[in-house]
Length: 207
Image (tube, rainbow, N blue to C red):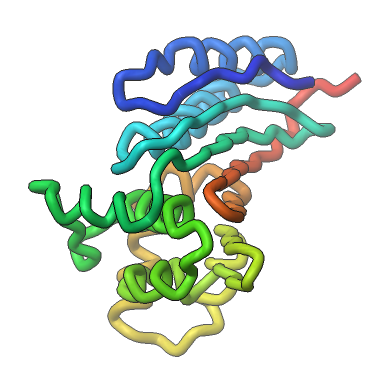
């Protein structure tokens, strides 16, 4: 089952339609009240990403389920290049400070940089060097970039213990998205980024 695709790009976009689709899907799948609330929280967390991003892009959101697993999709396409976006960030009054960023902030930065880097992966990795998500859970190749929350957690578990690593675990504990989702996957190629949030609901009624 798949919901309608909804445009959710701008900060002023009406996300009420997307939230309604999430609630309606939960009802169709006969989710419990607790599971329905979790699905709506994941929807809200995912939709917060494009609303918090810098740059010109289009974004489309939809939900679907396979068996007892719900997938929340966000397709994004950049309408400007990496260097133009860097100029916008430099001109912005709010500058990035990774030392004070939450997991959500780092995920937003990662998605922004992946989206607008396009084919300039060297520029992308150097600009994002302070973001742990670049070094854990990410795979970079000439054809694109991918990252997953499950791989991120796995690599953190096997990394040498440091203050920075402890901080990363604390950020995950404080993140609603990281706590509820089974996985968050990011795939970037050219000027497009696709995000998928996955959550299995054992109480889901399947045909």
